[in-house]
Amino acid sequence: MNTFSALDRSTYIDQLKDNTFDLLIIGGGITGAGIALDAATRGLKVALVEKLDFASGTSGRSTKLIHGGLRYLKQLDIGLVREVGSERAIVHKLAPHLVTPEKMLLPLIENGTYGYFATSLGLKVYDVLAGVEGDDRRTMLSREEAIKKEPLLRKDFLKGAGYYAEYRTDDARLTIEVMKTAVRHGAVCLNYCKATKFIYEQDKVIGAACLDEFGQQAFDIKSRFIVSAAGPWVDNLRKKDKSLSGKHLFHSKGVHLVVPKERFPLQQAVYFDVPDGRMMFAIPRQTITYIGTTDTKFEGDINRIRTNQKDVDYLLDGVNNMFPDVKLNYNDILSTWAGVRPLIHETGKSASELSRKDEIFESPSGLISIAGGKLTGYRKMAERIVDLVAKRFCKQFDKDIPDCKTDAVVLMKDPLKDTDEVHDFCNKEILAKVKAKGLKAEAATYLVLNYGKNATTILDNMKATEMAPEIALALSELHFGIHYEMVLHPNDFFVRRTGRLFFNIDSVYKLKDLVLDEMRKQFQLPNELAEKYAAEIELALEEATHFPVDAVKENV
Ligand code: FAD
Image 1 (cartoon, rainbow, N blue to C red):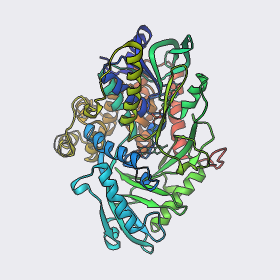
Image 2 (image 1 turned 180 degrees about the vertical axis):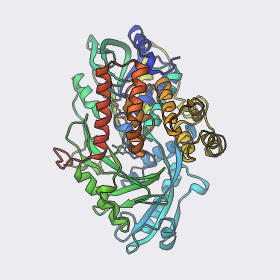
Image 3 (image 1 turned 90 degrees about the vertical axis):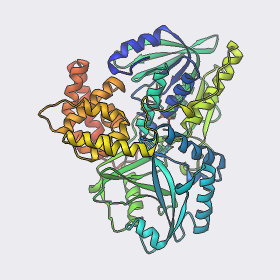
């Protein structure tokens, strides 16, 4: 079993070169990670390559909710609501520290998306479809009760509210934990390794030529079956396979803004109407509140998606309409992120009208591609793909592949059992350690929600130095990230393993030189690579905090 250490890349590359796999997955977002785990736990020999970092595509830029998709109920997509609704409970059970319950307030307003009776009935159906039980079942609130729950709500058009259960996560961390679990079950997964072209034998795809970005090494990976889980890039790979025909992708851009909690002191998460008839989330988290999302057709470069002024104006207007006393403006924005949804095109439909269902494409060469879907539904998407592979396996190699079992595969080596155990672990064991190390109490929650029981390892490995404890903690996290989570570039650490760029951007400014120095030592980075990494950090900071005026060919 591989350790998933970035310092062992050459071993993983040798394994990829020297073996013929049952399944090669292209794309290291949540979809690819889910497929790798499902296939590995059914006994298949699995390889996965990701061209940049794991979760650097859409899976690190979502609203970070594991949710039942209330809006799909409005579109009468009952099957989708049922599937993602029941998946929420399963994913929560598999990683209770990472997928945590979050009560959501849905204000009812004059001429809003949802009326009182439709909401009451809709949320009830939602609870039934999702199998929600006990205190988590929806309640309907009067105007006064709604104001008590969230005093910042606009009062003049408020009529009441629905109050229901959702789950919050960190999408990139969920992806990395699923990937690590796949690796524990024998999958070989490599980041910064691009599939550049397919290899064919008698018109059937039998592998992919790959390029390792770090060592600039080109090599081939051979596999019986190949799945493209390349998210927004799925059509690029279908094009390489000369099978891009019929249905194709529609890229829809979604932006989130982060503001300090003092400027938008929400008591609780709210899913609210915006003036154009869409709905948005505002979610308090640690010391910030984040707001999102937009949903606009995107025709720019999917390798470089940026928040622009039009996105910011839309989101600020939406918040200021529902929370008029807050008066958010550009100066309040600490950070932003932007991503594109890989949706399936349907003639005549706008971005927000398109279904979020996933779609599987099978090409004459044998390439299987999957796109669409939700973070929340990753496990079921993976099951469908591996069922298909299993069927072909049986036909071609006369070998039976067992059924999916990932509903019982926990996402941590040493898991916390449930929400109560998460709270106990955080408030007793970790809080005491955090205090003993001279850290602020809030570090306990941050560490447990990010790392589960690995919070102990990270705290125990903090070096006694003259540095401030926050810095010693970050360096210990970096060490953990490099040795157990394939951190290769500083931004892997700042953006996807710790969420610092979004949720604690000040710490990135403080830590960037130290982190780079440490990585320079650990990887013996030549100067030119260290300079490239330094530039990458500056670019990420610039993109999170500056918003070009021109919408280029975006926001159509
Ligand atoms: P990606 O995460 O994009 O992964 C594809 C990967 O393939 C990329 O990392 C890319 O680098 C890699 N790749 C591409 N080409 C190659 C190649 N040639 N070689 C190697 N690798 C390659 N869902 C929810 O359930 N809850 C939410 O709250 C939610 N909010 C959202 C908000 C926004 C704004 C957006 C955009 C989406 C949201 N979603 C949400 C949807 C969810 O994020 C996506 O459905 C999901 O992340 C898609 O994952 P993926 O793995 O298919 O794609």
